Image (cartoon, rainbow, N blue to C red; front, side, top):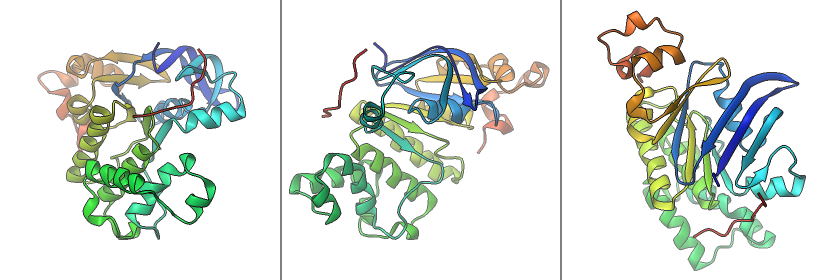
Length: 272
């Protein structure tokens, strides 16, 4: 059974369809990117995977849970198994790197321990491991408002890993970063995917990063999947279809050099 399964799925807002009748299967441990022009539903699809956007038609199952029928308490347990990384980082700026990462553990700590920020030696070791994975351990005691954008995003990834999630959803995690920081963040996501076996689904505008770092690419246009396959097969015709380009403009060009492109877990179990 896949980690994510969609059948004839339409998602949207107030009955207005943004994602239209898609079928999708994502297996455990995949690193998948969703690409496409602005406004075609990339974020709607991504956020639909943790039930933030509404199912209008069809069926969506995530980690064995049917999101069309899921109850409040079951949804809360499911979201604890899904880490989310936002373009705007969503860190507590006045807190340290350590405390921001540790906040990913809150759902599995007693309330009193969380309130007084008490951590066991094992938890300190665990947080330090996550800091090393993302390469931010030298800034452990720094306030997050003193970090660069790339450093903040790496803290956000470490916080997501601290949840011990089975899936990480990354919503345009590098769109506001310079090229060096963007590459560091993509390498960090790949490390999380490979080291912990976390399934990663990320929205990306940069096709070169999708090709280099991801196992699979989903191309969206007008709310529908127009490409689903390995990045090495993402040629000129596929790029033209995704981005509504005239294929004659692509002759002799590398589509990935186009201007478009620059720039041990114990989860709750839902029944299938």
